[in-house]
Length: 239
Image 1: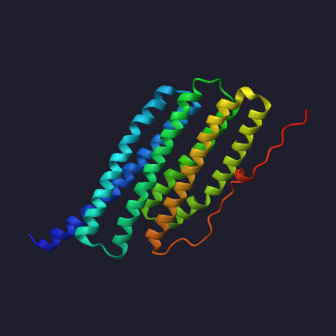
Image 2: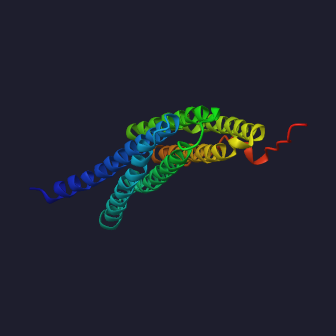
Image 3: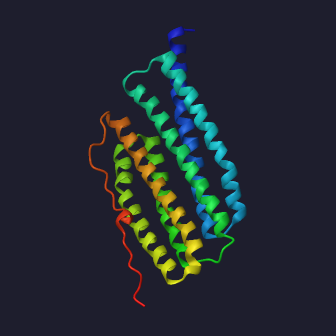
């Protein structure tokens, strides 16, 4: 057998393996977020516990990505498009691991929320989460297809997530001011909403990486942001 053909095939197999690892990680991260949102929306503590336990599976695949990428860099010395693919895999794997962590954090909050009386905003937060879940699905599809335009569309949708987060944030604060008994549950929901908003940010990071992977140049547009919660001031209602 031609040793050159064997080497090239082995090299391509390693690159394909990286792609498969990212697809597997992405599918797990997406499923983890969906399950965590269900745990909040349906007050399902058993499901929340499963999400927390299964986070380790994503961590294990990230370790495989690191190992495969280091081997390619050290032994194959990839260039140009291949080098971008290896570096993109490393970065995306790190982001998906963080998405899994945030999904687990949502699940942990769900276990506490499920022991408290339900408050109305508990239905608003999962709706926000579904938008982010859809963004993750679309950005992973853009990665699989090497579709920079699709990645860019996901990137622009982060502003919608920020607007929803801003709305949920204000709604939760209003509920807390109206009845102090809501403070504990609403505080946990605030953390859930913030975790979801951060997942949205990480999803746009993946979109930027895909854009660079396909185009070979970084995305130079300023990221659209609509989160104004840092500047929110609420005055207590007049007595």
